[in-house]
Image (cartoon, rainbow, N blue to C red; front, side):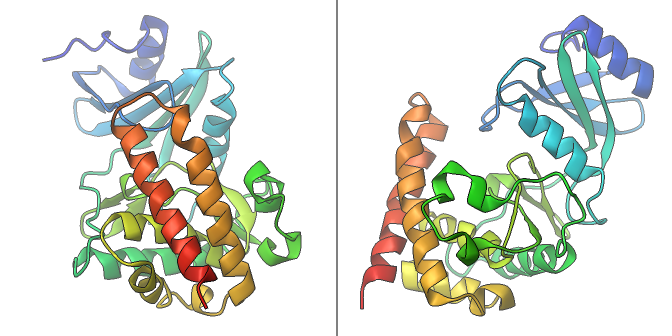
Length: 268
């Protein structure tokens, strides 16, 4: 059994145990795109999930945003936020633990309808946004070249609906809301297209899947093409932000997939 102090600074562990009781076991969950502590904690009667980051880290604002959003998310969209505090220079968030696996998005996977149904539900329940503190998607550096009116809307957008941010059991749970923005609801579905292509779908096949989401099906063609081009540029620009390894490999595949989608959109 791992010792609970191994990756959790002692003052933070003490604060967590004061709120939730003794930590009997921890399981580090490395591999995400956000720095800091990420671990599943086993308590006496349940498991919880800990995320923590140094208060001074540039990405700590993502944790602050995630805490705010998860505190107001409608039931069933993401794990419930149980506690958050700043302890000895660490911003800590404790969520309910969601057991399950990441969905399989490959062709003919039975997970795909569940995922697309959840994305449709996200758009419906998060329009208008229940959280007032998210910035507009048009303010993001990657989207400033697009006409703001193409992206405008009042939906709270999960901007990273990658398979590793989805957990599936009897339903689909969406995690990691720290990069959320406000904009047109169909954008959430557009963000998924490169991930379907990475999973083995052709650009045309990936679009056929997401067109089952009403908001995407109603999106202006020009706007979708613009976002496809932006995603191709964005993913390509992010490749070298990670050292060789799983994250780097996925970035490379996603950049290639987004470029294939943009080329498909530009083909008459």
